[in-house]
Every structure is written in C-alpha cells, then in structure tokens.
Image (cartoon, rainbow, N blue to C red; front, side, top):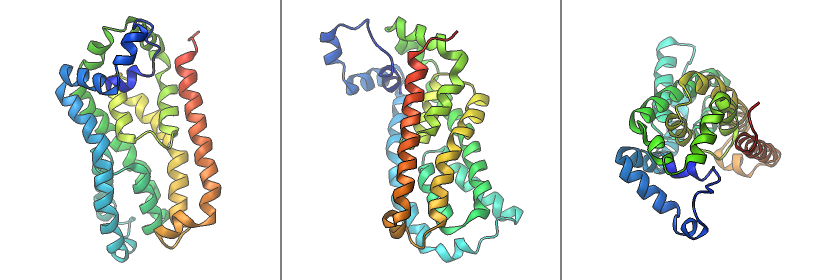
Length: 252
C-alpha cells in the first residue's frame, strides 16, 4: 500500500535517474520487506474481490427466487443478511459495487438500508484488520521521503476531505481504500462519517440500476445505463479533482 500512497506525492528527493528505476514492483518489494503481512494484504484486496464475484454472482442468480422472497423486516433474516454483507465487503470477498447491483436487482429497496449499514460496518472491519496489518509501515516507508511525510502531516487535519473524494470515486476499490486509510491512521470515526457520505451517491446509483432491470444482461445493455454512465463519469472526475485539490493546496 505504501507504494500506492507514495505515488500521490511529488518525490523531489529522488533523482530523475533513480525515479526511472523505481517502478511499482520495486515499491511493492520495499513494502514487502518492511511488512510482509501488509504486502499480503494488498495482494488479497487486489485479487479476492474479482474471484469472489466470479463465485458469488452465479450462485446468487441461481438462487434468485429464494433471495427475492427474503423478508428483511424480519430481525433474524435482516441480521443474517447484514452479517453476510459485512463479511463480504469487510474482508474484500466481493466489491461493494457488485453487491449493490445484485442487491438492487434481486432484493429491491427493502435491502437498501441494510446495504448502507453493511458497508458502514464493513468499513470498521476493513479498517481494523488493515490497521493491525499496517502497524508503522507507512512511517518507515516515508522516512526516505521527508517532503512527502511533511505534506501528509500537514494534511492530517483535513483528512475527511480526502476520505470523501476517495469514497466518491467509482473506480477506487473499497477494501483497498480501507487499507490506505488504516496506513494513514485517519481514524475510524472520520472514515465512517465521511466514507459513508462519499459512498452514498455511487451506491444509490448502482442499486437503482439493479432495481430497474429484469436481468443482469439488460442492466449492462439497456439505454438507461448510458445516462447513468455519464453520472459515473461525473463522480469519477469530481473524485479526481477532489483528491488532486487535497494534495495540491495548502491548509490555512
């Protein structure tokens, strides 16, 4: 994770010749040397969501009738569904976007509050195990980059802004960002508050898309998705602008 964060900062300390040599694999190798557990965690959150989707989506569609008949107003049913969603998202077993689409498609709006509560609790779970894996890895990595460390220290007071724009992005993985913020010691309260608000637009959009179609194939091909694609693009651009602004402006 350290190499991902370091690429956000201007590394003036490194000569152009050295910059060319330090690719993403060398940064990952450095992170692996400092903290093998964190390196394994990065691989996990990078690979497992895709594998989990390959297994979970066919299983969910096969049992669509059973899932559609679930009563989420029943405390036991709702609690079991909530725990399942928290585990899937919190342990990076399935992307939040895919789970939102499936929930909207198979379960309808009765599942939406549970989904929001699910990714909020999954944030705590992901942050918790990410913090346990990360320890002081970021501090050790940043020892070589004092300007980057100074910038990060300067921005700690407005970390909520970064959390919001990272969560707003439709392409930054949920589980990966949990590890990132665990490394940055953002604090679980800020991550829950700003992260939940940032996640709501894209989650609602994907969930709505799922409820409006009769099959996953039509969800991809329908004309309605075209308009939503522009919204996704808008969220992405807003997220990129917000992250850029966070790192390029000074706190006053």
